[in-house]
Image (tube, rainbow, N blue to C red):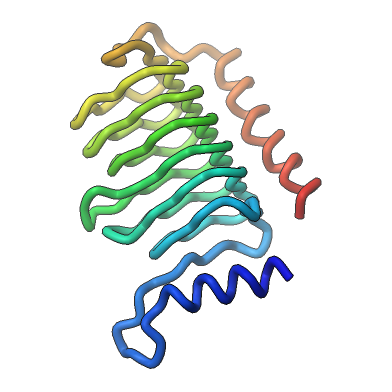
Length: 181
């Protein structure tokens, strides 16, 4: 029933019969999307990734590509603000209530609860962004770093224990999604 409802919604949002059909979401077979998440436009979700309740991914201006083993938690909003789109890498955790507006996130990143990352922000690999942080337009983090604050600033280098927490978080959501598939 749910699959039919989603297929109906996605097909209704395309221009049928046209050679210029709008792109619509593509979700890997092993990925999971909550029934009340909203995916619009050119969204691609990789293997073993998950999109949790209340999330809105609106790829009507540019593509949103989410890698493998990535979890997009409850009430996240992802929206490109240009044709450049949004890219989120592999093994990424995007925590509850985060807003990613036209930014890119490399592999192995953990983004805390209620972070706001504005257009042309780039979060580099092996980084943690602390809860409630604001990354103003054009922010580019350094790899292997922890950022926090409003505006976010580097507070320290990433530690081995941080890497372990990040791996566990990504893996736990890969496992947790299995309970809902």
